[in-house]
Length: 389
Ligand code: GLT
Ligand code: MN
Ligand code: MN
Image 1: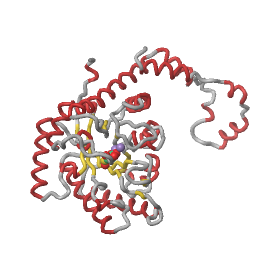
Image 2: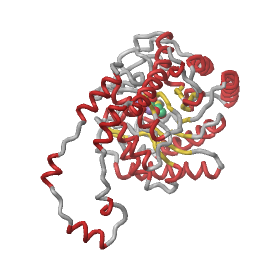
Image 3: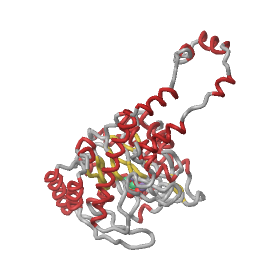
Image 4: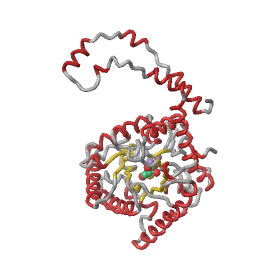
């Protein structure tokens, strides 16, 4: 195995406690694997070669733990981090499992639930920061509806905005070195979740009081559930300076939320995504938000974690090959050919430029006759991915 496929700290591969800790329970069946403790999971991840571990407040500290229990759990966890060298780059709040959140957290119609959601998040932020988190994720899994008969989408948006404004102020007030990353999902567990796509999140962020400290955490499977091109969403986030975190996994487009091993379903989409991240020099965590098949035992969980990282590194190498491939580059040069004659019309607006452009004669028929060798280029990409070049 080439050493380049071995995960190293600089690759910034991370997993949530809930990912390798997934016991295989689903809506139709019970757990098939026994639950490991957070300390055991840290050791499992270190063995697999991960750089970091992320968690929801209650992945680490049970929701009903006493203060003394909390302190003991956190101390044991810190010790495991010290022993393995694993870091905690991201943390988040579980605002979806407890029955209190059955109609949402920040958007619940019940003001007591909304206040409790804030209370829980303030404490969870403290916990995350205590363990070193620099990114705080908000995934509003229950922020939505099955029926719009009783919950106002407009009011819900305002409630979500107010909650985030409040929490931004808290982080600033505490002088925490923390950024927020909002994660979209179109549905599941709610029939419809508000702000269902990364694009919707980006629009929403611009309406926040402290939009500079809020970005996105796009998840591959979630954009695919919406039938969208994940890399395009990531590119938009990157272009807006808002790609604060990323959830890598895989998903068969029209299915339930599968959270499959990265690159296991749609190799081509995974390739273009990795190529994008590496080309632009994304420097954040590569977080795998997925879990092992329910068919598998602990060995399968380890194979799953190693597989996510290995596939990323293989695709990273393929992206380098793509760049070094003379035939591919020649086609790209042909596709992007530019004799500079149109430069006079681009860039900043001026009255004169608009006038010259309006007067310019274009050979529209010739423009329409020009084809592009995308078929050839795509087949070369497929050859490369399948190891035939
Ligand atoms: C949950 C969800 C994920 C989110 C996690 C963060 S929890 O597993 O399906 O996509 O990223 O809350
Ligand atoms: Mn996710
Ligand atoms: Mn998911």
